[in-house]
Structure formats: structure tokens, C-alpha cells
Amino acid sequence: MLGSMRRRAGIAAGLALLVAVSGCGDRTVFGQTREDRIAAQQNPATIQRAARANSRQSSVFDLFDTEDPNVTLEVNRYLWAASLDVLSFLPVEGADPFSGVIQFGYGTPPGGTRAYQATVLVQDPALDARSLTVALRTRSGAVDRETQRAIEDAILTRARQLRIRDSEL
Image (cartoon, rainbow, N blue to C red; front, side):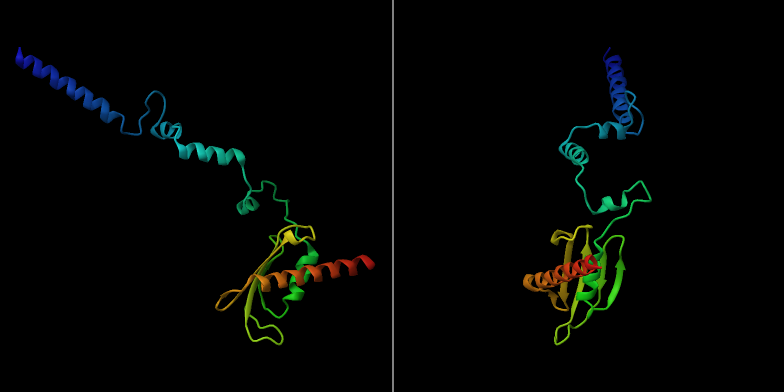
């Protein structure tokens, strides 16, 4: 009788082990694969991911998610021209009018001794200060905020002058 109980206990333990191991693979359990079960779990990361997807905040990468190939980004032509005009002492290394980015190389302003490099982003068709972002730096690092603001103001002033000149024609 003791041998029979050991045998039954061994069979039960073997079956329990078989059931436990069968759940470790990618097999379907109750009609779901392992990935489906993991995706359906309600943990904080899954909830936050779903909340971000539902709120759908815009980002820079949304520029590349357009489904219509005929959609173009618009930039303000006066801000674009004024940026090239005001920073004409810097060599243009790259310009993309579709995304509104102008990359300037190092150059020294007339009468100056320090070399500057700039990146300009014109991100809106409106002639507005919010449409313009300028990143200015020297070989030793970023410049102070006042210098950067002065360049932005000069670009905005020149853009307004260009628009007034065009409206008089």
C-alpha cells in the first residue's frame, strides 16, 4: 500500500510539473499566446503607455508621420530670408526649406573677434517671435541669452522690413 501511494504521489507530482512547464512556452493557453497575456496585463507602464497614446501630444516625429505625400510644411519666407541676411557673415552649411532648418558654420562678425556658429529653425508660416528659434554658440560653448535674443530681434526686425517692402510694391 505504501508503494502504491508513493507511485500515485510521483504521478501527481509529474503531472503538476508537466502543467507548470507547459505554461512556460509560447503555446496558447485559453486561446492566448504568451505575448497576448503580457500585453493584456494592467500594470502602470501599460496604463501610462495607453494614456500617452490617447492624449496624442505632438512631437517633432509627427512631421514624418504624414500619410499624404502632398502635405508640405510651411515656413515664413520673410523669417527665412531675414535669417540668411542677418547671419550672412556665417557660411551656410545646410538649409532645408521644407523643415525650416538653416545650419550655419563658424564665422566672425564684421568688427568682431569671436567666431560664432548658428542653427535657425523657422517653424511656422506666421511672422511671429514664436515661429523663430535661434541656437547660437562659440567654439567654447553656448553664448549668453542676451546675445542670442539680440540676434533673434535683429532677424525679426529685418523680416518685418522685408514684408513692408513687399507690401509697397
